[in-house]
Image 1 (spheres, rainbow, N blue to C red):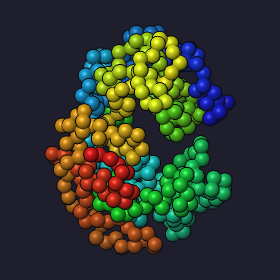
Image 2 (tube, helix red, strand yellow):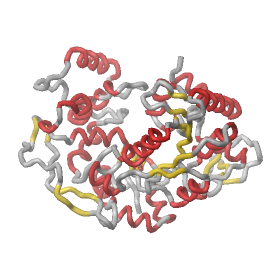
Image 3 (cartoon, rainbow, N blue to C red):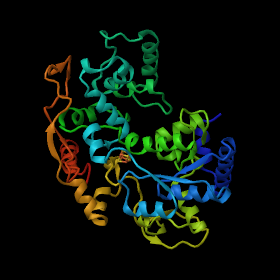
Image 4 (cartoon, rainbow, N blue to C red):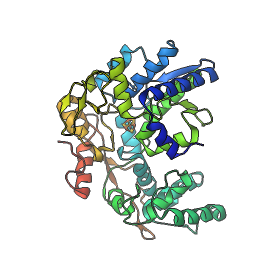
Length: 411
Ligand code: SF4
């Protein structure tokens, strides 16, 4: 039976055991789909390790790279060099922001804010359950008596959960459990801390949303998979996020039973495993990482002896995802946008500068200022990217005005 304890036990295994486990998962997946598999390649170091493991057994498995246009130029070149097939989203990042909002804070909070800002009478019947859940997180509404909800089962379950988790997000949750997280005002252990995020929700004049990844990455890859009929290997690890850890508990490394089957043979690996594997195999990785060296407790880098038990670190970029992404930027030990300014000044300028005010396409002149105690978010004008830049300076400045000037550092 898979649970978080088993996950921690597997994460504590030595690298050699993890390599064996990963190879077993790779073979299982390949055989299950009779070789109709591919590698979803991001150009990052985890993906590169995955390619090495898969190609060590099946050298002909193709690579597919979702070219969002938001990656470091070096990552794109590396993906090309590795022979990946490029797929592209249908929209540009600036159009995605204009339509769905800026990706800031976290996917969960951005989603909760997006739904909370919906004016109640505009919420469609078929959008009910999800919207109500997310709105409840931010507004503290509970019950919505004038709506025809399937009350009995849903509400009983919620009441039980509320008692059980007392406001914190449970380790393993289902979508229906989430509303409880936001109901406990001031509980800092909740990722939906209502007291914290309400000002961001109510006081800013730009859209915030979580849908960017779906449009920019998932849809192009889904389309590729449908067309090609290939089932993907991914280089994701459970340690990266709560959602990934929960996914592993539910499906294991090979999610045969998921709506979208995928294999993540590195699920129980850690970042240190990946770095040690690269060192051990002397693998070529993308140049944005610069060098992998050992680091001591004082933060000094040194060249480790082969096979040495030490903490490894990249001297260059630590994260190589989309360079303009604001998700998690408030937690960066080394602020990503400050770094971008130094390493890629042209891209930094585009990200930070310009932007423009436009009419809010969702402005509703008929909406009341208040919906019960809830102040509707209904600005006439909103801030969006312009052709010349994403305008993120204003977004970060507004966040920093609420949460302190060091909240998201960008200069
Ligand atoms: S990582 Fe961020 S910028 Fe990239 S697609 Fe996802 S949300 Fe958008």
